[in-house]
Image (cartoon, rainbow, N blue to C red; front, side):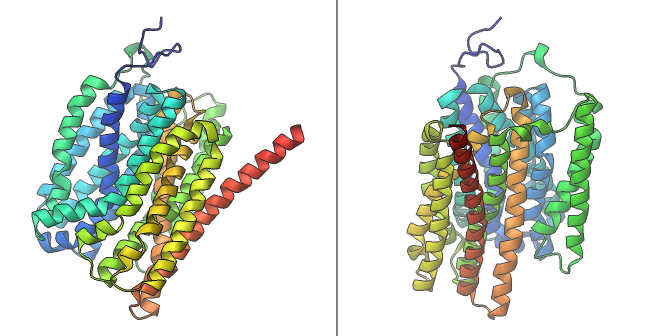
Length: 486
């Protein structure tokens, strides 16, 4: 029988604690996604504090992203089977412990290992957040909740350098980097206590047993090898010299093809699948995954090359570099909430409007950097970045809502994990591509950072344009289908 507030019942009634539970999820989601970007401005401090080499610094950044991306899909499967509250609490505990270990690290190797564990914990947590939103909300409320989650994604990506700069300024050049990790500990402890009280537990009778076969171990291995082989040469593109690394892409293609064949075989045999491939027959989901993959390849690279340009090329401090990207964060935060409110009425066209704004904002930023070269570029680029941020909020929030809207609640964790894995792969691929263009131009022009930034940002804008074309093509096809039916 249905009980009021039981989100697991077919006769769902809203849980009165759902907005407070969402607040806990958003705080934790912000914390895990923040650690993708906040470390970038801390690298000079880490190098000075524990004598980390360039290779160590590379793994401190990319190791987190790799581990994060590798566990997203299996973690989503565990959350679907055993309940998201338990999986959420396990991931949060691991994240807090790993953050403390990062802050206490006395050498580069210890820090790299702790960052890998921290990335695993972040990958466990992330699909639980999207799954809990699916679980706790319905209809227009779900759009608003995803809008708030998307705002969290946008803010965490853009505000990371600013917060990192502030913490390093307060903690000092030698030890300020430690506070970048220590700040997670009290936040995580408070979030753990709140999650115990506010997040609903899954009834014991609805939980699925987690035997080894429940994980589809062959699928886990094939997907893991595929994702690792795909992401590794991308995140290590600048540090791993030579062309040998790109041979891993062949292994990635073979592994992912084998994974798809295996999952189809499992489905035909009626056995447990790691990823239910029927999810991709849902048009809104497959289209949303494609847009997210390409869009994240474009927009996340803006912060990467912009902070490099103004810090290395113009001599901005970590704090000033963080302030320079704040307009994007503000625009994204505001519009993501608005996008969450509007998506139920407007649908996919809202995503297209957002993509167009991001594209225009990027091109205008290129123009601003050309017309106002030198130290004042931070002021000149503020408004164009604000426009791009507004557009970004209208992309991430509505696309997330539309992608997961038709997904059954029982598959929300795995669907969210696959979607976010695509985002992580897109980010890594974009940074590899745009980074190669950016650094190639720095070398070719003998240190003209401004030219390299403009060239790199135009490349990033091209990726956003591809996402825009995908969205427009789908809308035209849908319109033709409607006209033909009439």
